[in-house]
Image (cartoon, rainbow, N blue to C red):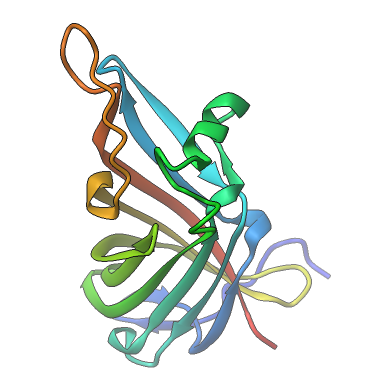
Length: 193
């Protein structure tokens, strides 16, 4: 068997798109993370290890959808004390709200291999609309015969919109943790057989 992967999918307007079907997130190759300013001088990055989801690819991309569940307790910022604080009621309140969800409501193609995915994000039991800017990274058949697709996505949210309102203020002014949080996603999904 050749080590070179064979591209699978369909070409629409010169772009190779994934085959129509149901794709499960490959959690070992998916990153759901965030970036937030800390003390107005640096940025802290975190990720969630517990992610599960399904991507439905329609014949018309506008008929596609995504559903994701995040284990909020799986937060990892590379600092266990900070992670414990994030799990507390000051931030995520994972004892009461252990999972977060994102469910798309519309997929709007915005250019070759790009789309705006509108959806409902639920954090701490509060649901707000969030639009992800999504880029198709590639479509491939892996050496084991699995059809894979990769996406990158970003969005910005205001954490206070979701009840994450810890408001430590520094003596010199400014917030200990900024309100604006950038979401960064690298997702790989496998077509169900």
